[in-house]
Length: 397
Image 1 (cartoon, helix red, strand yellow):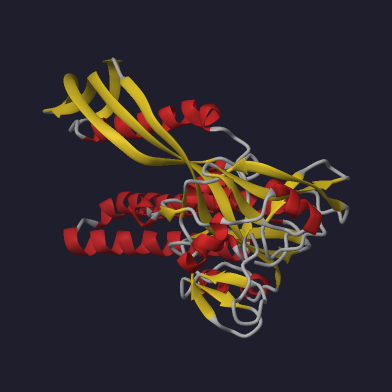
Image 2 (cartoon, rainbow, N blue to C red):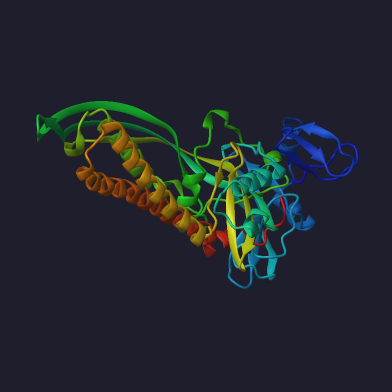
């Protein structure tokens, strides 16, 4: 619903910095819970249709009413919150979106409100990019194309997990390596295991935004949505249940393997017992900032609760490669000199140590190149059209 200022009737928006509702007209501030009673007495769906306002209001305890906008170009449906007016499609970017109907959708049970403001998010991204030694100057001083504060839908799972495992691992025995066998039995409960419920946002992007501190989660209140975009889930808890189980299995097995003091640890046989006891709907905050470089869009994400910056940008490949080569050469000379000085080797052995020094320097160079490859993968994620369409042409939050 639209929250109106009791003093001047202007719209109120949620301020992440203060945790209060700020008036756009007179500048007054109010507590979010001050409007709970008003929310419970929200107008009916028919009244919302007649007023043609862009509201979020409560229909039932587990449902909420929202205005649905349909894009005549791509068919996408968008739910827009109380203080936004959307004239462009968030997915294809076409200015053909029209008000279609008022609909009811499942209301989140929990929300983590924004605690990072837009200015803080922009500053964090600028600081991150300006500190990159190989980031082009044009990117370090980027011009913002758009910034969006978006509540991303998540499912929170509670999973009881137990397992008995037989494992193998390799250990040193003198100069040889032998295989040993181990038994582990353990049980645990995964509380609030998070999975994003949006098909539009890639799983890799949402996982990089994590972790969110779910200890600071609060009961959902529409007041927190004011001034931000909120995506409704398009993946049900049942659809994501198998993925939640898979993730819990990966984390459980990783901890078991850590308890085995051996290398090349493998699970030979196990008997997991898994019970999903809860799946609840929540919204978590994220900032999405887009800029252009060589006419390509790049989107950097910021966790709206912790301020964690996610994403990568193009680097100066020539400068980076030359630097890694230089480091490799210098490392080779240093390793050779240190070996010669400390071990006082004979002149006839110096060639062997030079070779070892070169190998060490080459390894450092190779490690640097591998790092560049990982950065390239992150760049592709920031540059992806899927990410750009997720953010594109939503109104400023």
